Length: 214
Image (cartoon, rainbow, N blue to C red; front, side, top):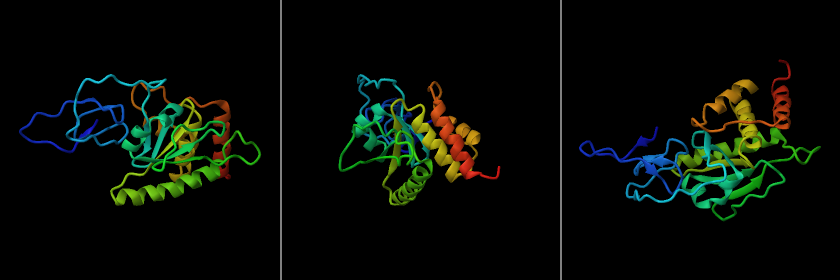
């Protein structure tokens, strides 16, 4: 549920409504419970038409104030990315080119597998995310959000596989446990994780690398 940060004991609670910045429902002066965007107190509540993405699904925050998941369509909404505190976009599909490109957002493609350019090197990818995580923590201490959006075309397979790999690496989780932890971050009604066999196989191989004696 959204957390109200600006309220008056004698005033009625602000009405939740669609936010033009992040695309989710939360009241002015509150922090969005889905993506972490803080809405200005003086933002209006006009009944504006809601823009629709192709799949009409929100950006998912996997690790608070750091790692987010999305689809290709999300990369075309630079204003939304900035409003959500996203300053880095990781393309997890080498064949795709992200829509966003500006001085305010750093865009790059995740490291590829040396033997197969269509696959990712999950070891190098999670180490890159580890560096960005340190950067995000420092930025948060300074009061400046610096989230990372990992995306793939649909947002259901390759990008979630990267998030699962990072949870396995950073939190020492096994594959099944990491997948359950990620699934808990999705809101009710979301299509969630739908890993392709190739992405699942890459994660299983990564698990064997992390836990060679188990």
